[in-house]
Image 1 (cartoon, rainbow, N blue to C red):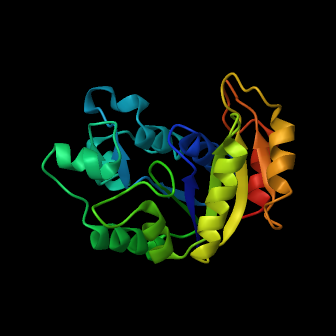
Image 2 (cartoon, rainbow, N blue to C red):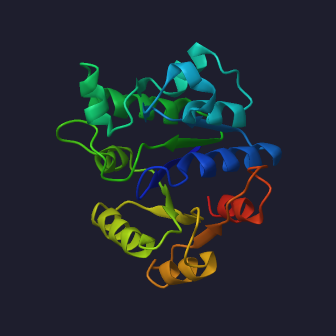
Length: 225
């Protein structure tokens, strides 16, 4: 079994889009794949079909039941805020040790490939002392770093790479997920990041209106795992 943590430089950049596309591509290639999205903020149970856990469940061809959602994402919060603030709004908190234990148990019991999708960016707070970076460091599994294609993403990406290197975390690949109304050509952004990525391959993924696995970029990403 091999596990990967899907993280990003920020929110709404494309973690779930990339994870779901990889799941579909790998399943069609005959591989066994599982996924988790343990922490979700901005979760509205009245429109669960559009939530990140639901997107992943559809990619896995699993039913979208309450039990499946709870198994995929045990820590769900309504407010679209950082997890620590969203939890506080509900008088709750995230037990960091329980989160790490939940993730490790999934790693231990899963056959095939497992994707653990993070929440927000790499430094988003989970509680009053720990961030997503601490969660990733505790698991010490390779990362898929998803970044945007917007103006400014190069600085954000290189900052993230420096922070991840300080914690000695391995990056399997960097995926540049094309942003809406992108002012810089995707290929130029990929090339610029690649000059500073210290050997980590950078893959550009255009915006796709449908068919999440119908692009050669997913084959390239999968080959790096």
